[in-house]
Length: 73
Image (tube, rainbow, N blue to C red; front, side, top):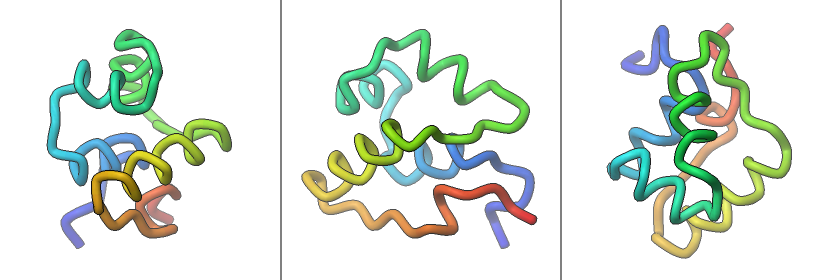
C-alpha cells in the first residue's frame, strides 16, 4: 500500500522515474502543466493525458495499471 496518499499523477510520475521536465517532454506537454498536476491536491488525469501516458509507458516498457490512473478510495 505504498500508494496511499498519492494522487494519480504522482503515482504515474514515480513509475516513470524521471524529472518533471523530462516527464513533460516524454508526454509532449508543457513542464508547467506537469508541475501543476503533480502538486494538485486531487491530481486527476484527463482522458487525453491518460492516452499520452499509456503511449509513453508502452514505448518505454513501463507497466501502468488502472489503479495507477485512478485515485485511492
